[in-house]
Length: 216
Image (cartoon, rainbow, N blue to C red; front, side, top):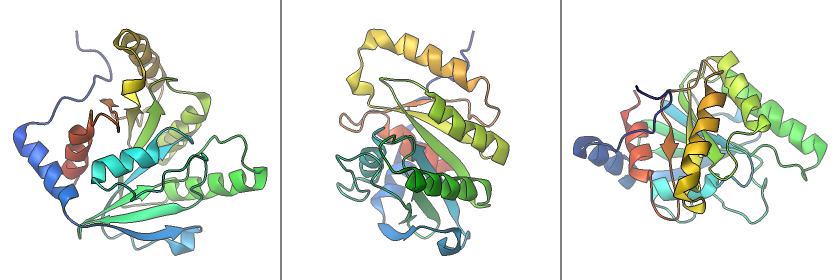
């Protein structure tokens, strides 16, 4: 019996090469956006990365792009307060969304982030897929489900990417995947495959690249 939300399979040679070529090309920071009026024209395929603070989002973006400091990693979770746009060649945007769920940020700052996030996710016609990052050590939390529910309501397909897979023991995988699958079963916008990644070890990076390269 095929499990719901299986792990994405390793890409074949052709898809692996397609993903490699996409990210071996020009990848440049375009702009940071603090209001909807600052968004670039939605004239190209777009993917976004969302995740709670300290989930390893900047490290993952740096890993898939092969750039050590493209996305700003910080020892202070929640530092990224803008929607950051990066160009992938001439036909795609990679979008780094503000981290959410950071309890120590001022309430007014959190509310501003949340409002911008909701406006972007519910009104971006060129957005092909949202990648929702979930820490393998913790599984899906309530704050993650809030974003997933917003994506459901916005009819934006999202795919869960499990980060920091090297930080848990192989024996913990089954319980992690069971929890994630149970939570995702309630979300109609969830794409039916999971990606297990480690920015440090390189696990899942080629798979994620090939998924992005295959979106049209």
